[in-house]
Amino acid sequence: MIRPLEPEDTDTILEIWLRSSVAAHDFVPRSYWEGKLDEMRTRYLPDSRTFVYQDESAESVCGFVSLVENYVAALFVHPDRQGQGIGRRLLQWAAAQYPTLELSVYAENKRAVRFYLREGFEIRQEQTDANTGRKELHLLLRNKRY
Image 1: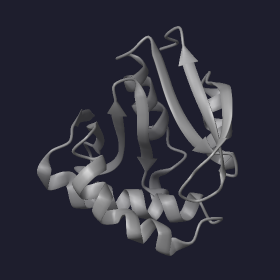
Image 2: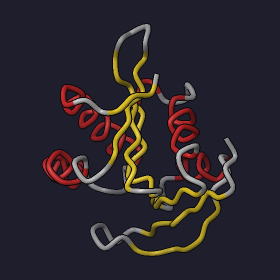
Image 3: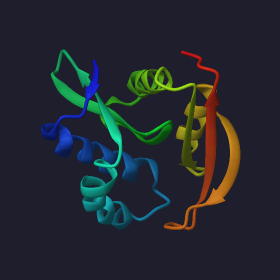
């Protein structure tokens, strides 16, 4: 089930974000992600509309998507639950809200890049992330597929 973020979900999604970020971005030091936790809690989450994927059988939150208008600011699934279609369901839900979606992803995060391209996103631009100095891809999904 996909539902809006509730205050009691915050610690869980921050844990998902940190664990997933560290696992997916081994090219960025863990300390970078740990240093962003407070900013995630106090700035990024409040500035976005966040929706969680709750596993009804386990009654636990195992993924989330954060949107700023049609920009996917975050899409993360707990590392233990990846590959089960949760990220795809969250993305489908987000795509149903807007005629286009945009996002940026590190080019070195090959798994995520393959996922987004498979879901119909197109690479629109390459850029360098000012915080990490790593190459990012700006992606666009248009013409609702879902």
